Image (cartoon, rainbow over all chains, first blue to last red; front, side, top):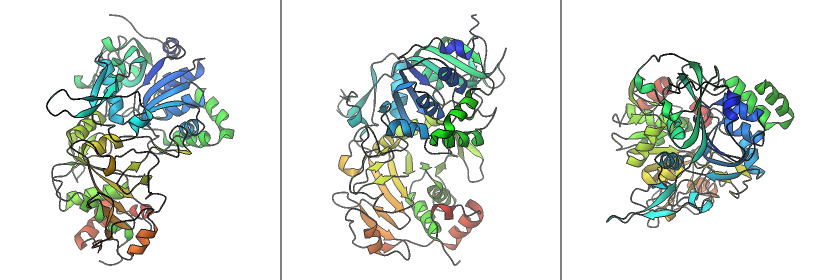
Length: 265
Length: 237
């Protein structure tokens, strides 16, 4: 079996300018921050980022890496709003496709299933479709004739996710309470990179926690603490103090350069 | 029991949202709706299902009785056995809600959370709103961005916006055109005050006074559910 171990910089070197990058986790939870930091250190630009957004979005916006953002929300959980995301939106710095959370999942699933779209009710009647006129509706061909949203596949060039454990071949395990949508991100992407707290020879715990198998993964990065300052339970909770520092620096540009330097050091 | 606070009245008003819900997932956002859902479960609605806000369903004794990560919450949203109580940066007379952005969505004056699950919630199952500061800036003639779908834009078989609970009043949409109706004002709040704090005309026939918590409810709120009185920070007395 193939040994897929690599460094974060090697994984990120596979990404090209203008690509669509899906980022796993949820809000400020189990974000692949080591891989995100590798993007910040790189010369990459013009990315389309698809995610249930947390500080990954703010950091990438701060570094000018994002051309377009596809999201259901951006939040730091214990801090409702990410200041960098707010600034990017309020200055018109990024193009957006803002979706209902379920539509985002459905778009990833359609991509993973190699379908052009999947139907969903979410979006009907709301302004999601007003701001995204490229998203069409479809009528049920059955007797009900109901009109539904035809959520288009959200195809990703690259997926970046962080799990608790992985082996060198790309099988990977979550040990916290929620898998989030990391498996869907990997199924929707052409190239899939998982960072993990620890690379193991064999897995402990119930096999149902093995969220990713090696067909779904192209590269494995051992990155202890690699989700910080977001949470990666049970290995560690969110570093609330560091998250507060991030939010304060993000809200005050005079503090930002110094904070970013320390974060990337 | 005496000295009943505004926060406690809001908690019982939120508990009453779940009357008759039975085996339904209650998804309250914010402290006061959460206390309301827990109170309902301990009193009139013992069959209610409650999440810890992460991935577990918990009994009132905090025993895990189920696993509900976000992907399964989305299944429940589509399945429909859920009553969500969302916040609202803006809500209008037909129950359209905005948690996305203030101003022009292309370049907002104030970016908020995003659509989150509001479009899917409102098109799939019962939805109520909690407004801790009832003001003309929140209860607006028209929302800037429609996140949650109101009655004038409702489509499909499952749209059901139930009530709006605020720090001043309880409101619903039980009118011929489904525009907002004042159901009850909280003790000490006048109908005129609610009108003054609302940007659009309200239906106001048969307005009652929001009920007071019972002694049992007060005891549960004060000693079991919120002994540190965090509720007073959400609705100061």
